[in-house]
Structures are given as C-alpha cells and as structure tokens.
Image (tube, rainbow, N blue to C red; front, side):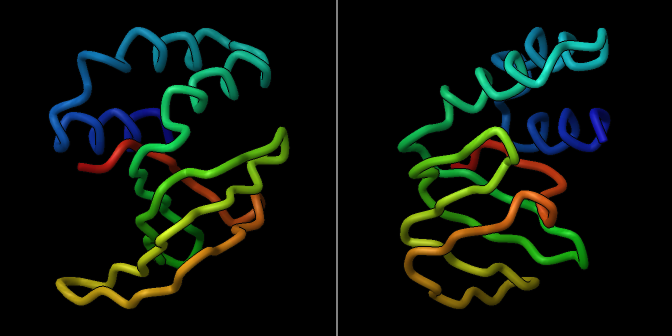
Length: 102
C-alpha cells in the first residue's frame, strides 16, 4: 500500500513533499502520526481510492481516527467519466488510499 500511495503522489508531482512523511509509515509510525499527515490535506482536493476499485475526488472536510472521511463537492471518477455526488461520508473500512489531487 505504501508503494501505491507513493506512485500516486509521483504521478501528481507531489511525491517530494510527502515522501519523508510516507517513509515514517514504513518505519512503523503510530496511528496518530499517520492521521497528522492528513491535516495537510484538510480543505484541499483529495483522491480517495476505495475497495472495489471506486475512486472519489473531493474537498477533504473532516476525518477521524477510524479514517471515516467527509468529502465536500465529491465526484465519483470512473475512467474518463465523473458523477457529481455532493457531500459524502465514506466509512473508513472502505478506504485504501488518500492522496492529494490537483
């Protein structure tokens, strides 16, 4: 999963910014350190990859320690098509990767 996250960041051009923080994950950081990284994404556009291959894009409004995520202006992305969803609460059990979006 760490490799997939870094690959996604490299494709968006943001890998250098977050590479050192991602390295902390591989060294066994606690949950609290992992969640602190998400603070940088608050009020910013993020991509959320879900189980089952679904991908959501939206503005990260809030999250909790279970990785439940509240997205504003959310869109579901499927290939080159998007579907407007509005405000969405995603259960943390379904989240695979959260990365910054442009």
